[in-house]
View (cartoon, helix red, strand yellow):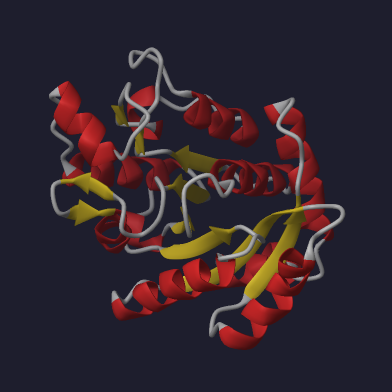
Length: 248
């Protein structure tokens, strides 16, 4: 078994809530699985879980995408009922979130998989426990981050602030993906990729289409297809440490 510090892994964070982190994380897991990669997945803290004895909807989707039956306590060590920030939900429900528990689960997944995808909650400044933020979790795990942002008005500010915060907090950034581009974008949406690419120091690694969330599984398959077809797919695979796959 290889130690966690040699594990290829990626943290998926958002510039806001509801930007499609779960779908991008699941689509990437699907894409890598199709290429024969043994993918481990994590949603360390998931709130809004109806039955906390079982995995929540997001963690379930990640497991399905990775075609991997992983122990629930490794995939999602903390499951909370209230659909609010993890620290708020945990406090309300009397749950103490211990970062080292998440780190141990991550290390265990790294030891048995080729690549591990970790999906966060909200953005970098989302509190997990007290003053412990998503940014602190990323630094604890010591892995790269891929940001998911929206194409709508306001995304330039949100994305630039997230990338700036990552730089200030010594978080290694693989790049960012603009998710949910409508078939007929308005002026702000149409200009967002160019504006961000010209302003941000990080790499724009793709623009994925808006997909109606009528069937989550179908949406993941379609997003995986879209990601595979992106001109930047090879660059994405290289940046996350899978250069061998980029040459296929």
